[in-house]
Image 1 (spheres, rainbow, N blue to C red):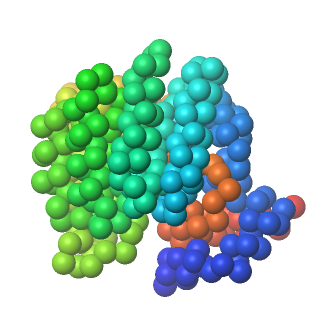
Image 2 (tube, rainbow, N blue to C red):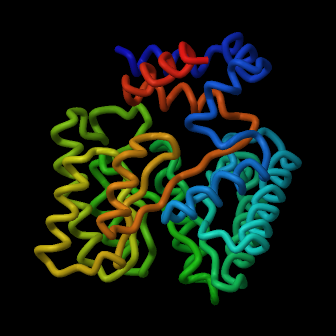
Length: 308
């Protein structure tokens, strides 16, 4: 019920305009979003790096409507890569293909993302581009896109993708990605999907996540386990210890502003942690989805406002 309410709010134009144009809206979003400018993302990344964690930076946005918007999105990511190199940040980038123009001009999207992967591969040390997964209509297109980019000379270690554990096809997709040596971020999934293609119950999603996580951890390829579920994290730690998998052979990934206590405890225990840091002017829908995912986030914001 709560999640559906916040999804509805994320699509409300009046609320979005109010939030994005007011100081109050921008202030409360700061828990989960770095800010609106690249400089904001750099500043927050530096702080997270000092706390012993790596970062993935995402310029919020998707589904551009024309080639100029797609090119602008690509140029922003070029600038982010420049800032990562200039400031020696322990960071990579995450992007959505629809933000790069996939639905406008697929050839242009290939050109933009291919250029970003090539630039990341040429950095010292080499950078990395994570191609995010979107709703199920884009699953196969995204996987085909990533397989093609990965096969291009010099790109192999600099591009990866995301697999959503709630999709029933994910184990098969993982087998194909691992066969090509492609790095994966495993998450549970955040889109509304029909029961014909996705597990519906939390129990089934969690069980599939654990199954896929163990496959990834034993693959010998460096992957990211993206979850705030403490039970799953502890299961992953126990599995790694039991199977003698080194702590630097994979990483846990979490969202900026969520479960900071858990993030810090993992670092203290010697596990690798990467924080997803979003920024940009299109922060409102992302912010609403984060509130809907976890009631504690709503209560945190309410307490924060009362203290001001």
